[in-house]
Length: 253
Image 1 (spheres, rainbow, N blue to C red):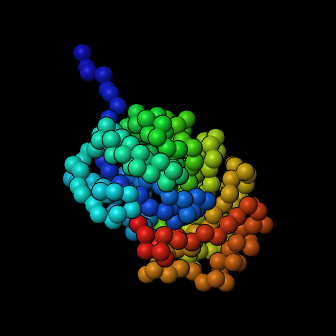
Image 2: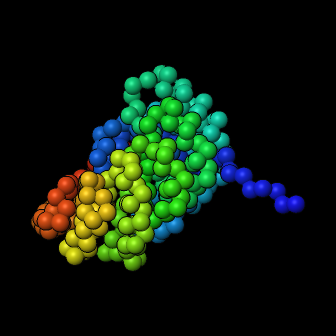
Image 3: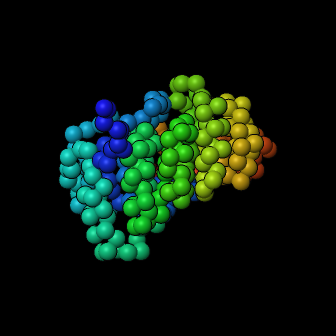
């Protein structure tokens, strides 16, 4: 008789640290970041390695910049012991816990086991590429915020998964959700307008964030182009903001 499949209780992590959220609507909030390994996309502008490693880097103390290694995969018990100590020493410092990657939803079965315990410590914020709707269904009841990307072909180098993004947003809107679109000088207005229309039709209450592409420590798009993209997209979805990657300019993780 086959052994029933059980959900994994350990995660492939890349790093765990405390810093300021540098993107989107929670910009400036202090968070604990759990960076998960693996990704189902390969965006041309991505500067974050996501291949699994033998060890996860973890800060010795929040914001210290000093890291040590934890063997992968990492258990929830190990992390909860560390986070409980961080929270005890600075109980009001962290706004929330960011699940980032890579793509965290590739480990959704494990997250379904972890998130109830993590949420007892801090609210949970998911950063996702917005393509894995079935995985989101497994964990959305434990989430407080979702930062969802729409991946434009002009900057990723791959076709935009419009249908997957629409399906994902239809589920993500059950919690506090905003949509982020990375744009560069090469981004045609038609792409951004289509993204704005998708948001307006699927989750009109969601904020749309245009995030200028960062290249070599600077914005990879001119102010004139950026403002023109905003002008055209706001005609379709008015709740639209421009927010660059502030942590990159501040030299933070």
